Length: 189
Ligand SMILES: Cc1cc2nc3c(=O)[nH]c(=O)nc-3n(C[C@H](O)[C@H](O)[C@H](O)COP(=O)(O)O)c2cc1C
Image (tube, rainbow, N blue to C red; front, side, top):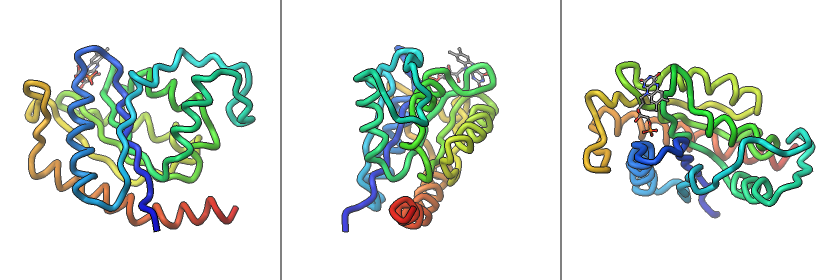
């Protein structure tokens, strides 16, 4: 049986961002873990304009190629991890925009959050993501919360530490636990 596809979504699109380094750290742990086919999805490369589809995404009636391509990317995933910064006590706009573009493609799939920020570790961004996930029937599986103050990105590399690596393993365990059941649920309905 093929391994489920885990997409790690880099939420920050900012030049000079640290999000890419943090996503690479989680990606390497997930690849070494070996329970998922792991893909890095970079919203800077996906490069969606501010939502411009004329129809509600629930209809799945997409006019633009950028939406069709984004739909194909999200459709092939069985699970997600969003790597999100905290901007002004919430998550960043590019992440919300990418979520808003689609509907059915997200439903009944498990999702984890790797948030990062100052002293509060991006937890406000994670807490604001959860009601959005709920609206899209994404099933929250866990969080990793990274304090950049004590574990910064240095020369473009995020090394993490044992505590954060353990939190990442716990998240992968939770994703692994619920992914097969949710995949079956999507087949059955
Ligand atoms: C517009 C903006 C708002 C920010 N607001 C917060 C904040 O509310 N809380 C926080 O902990 N850090 C905040 N920061 C600092 C970010 O956590 C830090 O710049 C981080 O590197 C951003 O992620 P990125 O480099 O991947 O874009 C903010 C940064 C930006 C650019």
